[in-house]
Image (cartoon, rainbow, N blue to C red; front, side, top):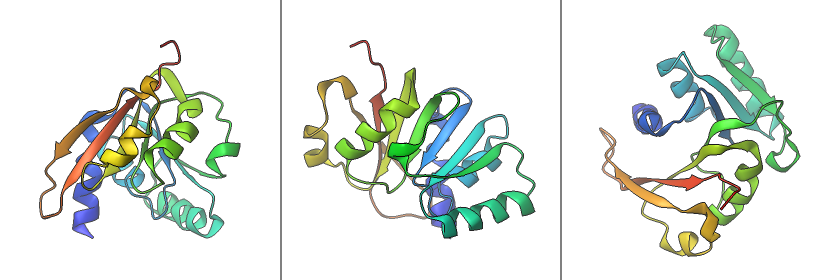
Length: 158
């Protein structure tokens, strides 16, 4: 469990702005730890599975996390009131699919972050040139496995 926590918090320095979307939040990683660690940020947890979002809603309520909101919806159908500064995912899908779904939800000056294990070279080659992917290797305390962050541009004026 602590590895999931450290893994989630390892990306905090990559977050832009204060409107964060955890796309495909599942069990709440990385969104819940980020919301606790960064109380000044507004975190939205998005998942299509109502059992998972019911659990997340209970966690948010029991911990009185006022800066975290839970939404039950598929990413392709979700229309936020305001676009996000950062969209992040830990294990959503391959990069091209994730980028295509995240880009409309992210503000033009924002960033799309994908948490990955080893550098996903094959997935990166499938991204459009506008994504401008940057891979950063990260060290997660207590985790011997390779981890990286793939940062992608949400800018539509490229």
